Image (tube, rainbow, N blue to C red; front, side, top):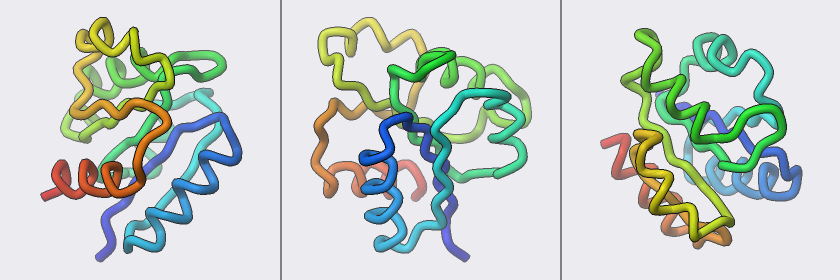
Amino acid sequence: MLKSILIIEDDADILSTVESVLSFNNFAVTGLSHTHDIIESIKAHKPDLVLTDYMLPGMNGGKICQMIKSTHETKHIPVILMSAYHRQAISLANFNYDAYLPKPFDIDKLVKAINKLLN
């Protein structure tokens, strides 16, 4: 059975590219471009891992990570936080993410980070 990845990314080009790459690497991929009812969406999709951008409309990825990690049904899900705002990386540590990738990121590094968290 394929491992399931939920991607939360508002940039359609990045979302499409990451979906394609992860599908090619044998992951079941679902992409969301919104943060509306995000915890309910995560509970419904039951992903093995969440990959989220930091800068999102409505709610930032750090807050999403905090919500995932503080909700009983989702706290076990690894979260990778991505951001083009590298200077914030140090301050992002309080969001309890499992891995951080600065944008732009190398696709191979992304796949390695996902495999590391899922194995």
